[in-house]
Image (cartoon, rainbow, N blue to C red; front, side, top):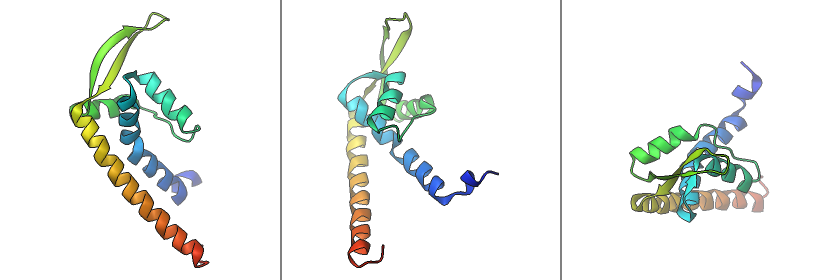
Length: 123
């Protein structure tokens, strides 16, 4: 086993990335319908190359099965390939709002705790 796999910082990073992936995909789809490569490229580019979606279809199928997104339509790309576009559903919009509420509550709580430690000189 490599040292990277046993690195607690790496495990935390992987878990955080997995935890926010649904929220990021739903956020992008709340702005516009997108196809898979658009979604993966947007996540990578808009996160400053800190996040990537390695196997998007497993996530898409889970979101479809949950009723949060749907395969809306197909379009032919300039290179001739047919692209499947995904669209957020009404249930997805509600779920995204819930995810964002939880995300902001947790991240604000973490920030408060970390700031407290910095102010008392514990950090």
